[in-house]
Image (cartoon, rainbow, N blue to C red; front, side):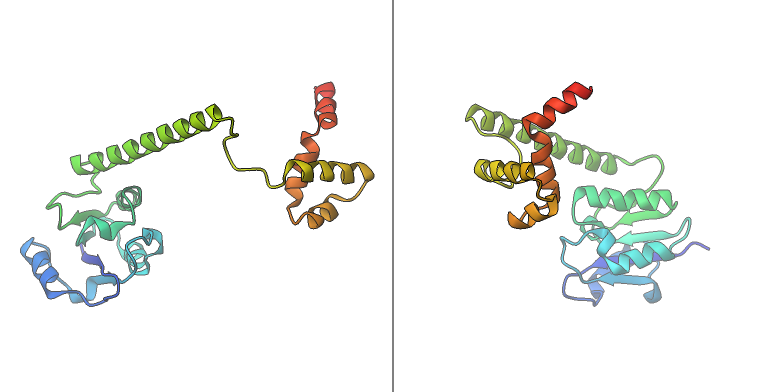
Length: 202
């Protein structure tokens, strides 16, 4: 038997507003007070961290209907909303959103609105990649090394190499410079002598 669940996220307020229940009823969905799930988490909370939504997705079975009050209830970003839609599709649930109308967002033949969301995610990804490349190019033109700055200064790296040459343990050197063993190992492996040994072994 197909069941209909209603879900909303209302930050700071767990009471389901009567106005939204009326909207659900007018949209043609059955309202069962025992099948209403409400989170009250901040909008930046990921879908996987919304306890009522998690519980609802665990309870719902194939062909059950989930009615969300808005897209924002389904995740903290476009990418997160798409992840919730994909999860519903995998579970063969029917997912509707009052803001969009009678469109099953989780249907196998992906509706136009979901394709539009995927295009927005791709657009954002492309913009981030372009910005990152541009930032790297500008940094190089200014003589700066892109990426994370080194954990230790040039003088400190020389001191690390000197201590390694004296035979001090890597862990002890890391403690002295308040850094990680991995940092000390990277400095050791990046030293000219180490590079020469690797080249000779190749």
